[in-house]
Length: 103
Image (cartoon, rainbow, N blue to C red; front, side, top):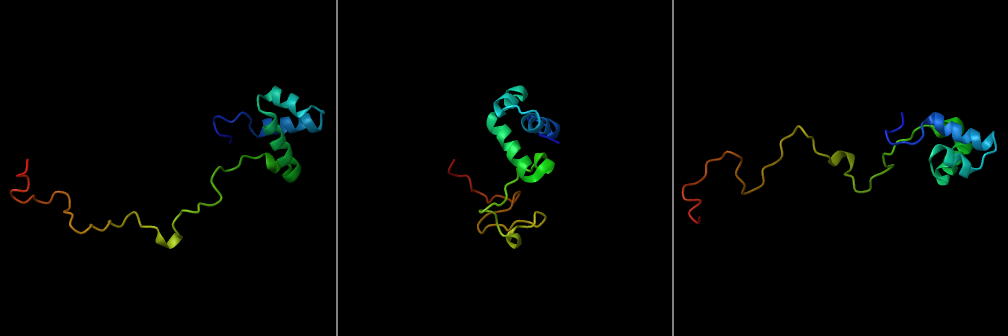
């Protein structure tokens, strides 16, 4: 399924490819008829020629890699409590008498 702002679904992409390859339309004509840029038409043509109909399918926008991500073993378990830093009192700890005399 295409994302909500996508101009073309898989059917629309196939229609663009058919108009250019089968019907002989120019990329500019196909782009104007579907409301996309010529670069988008060329992108779908290139994917169709390389992969066939499967090239017109929706693709993930997830990055292939993330160089700053932590290695798998170094990620923290979200269920484990975080260590308390030295010198900090836990929430709700009683405040020493006279701690706010400077006010």
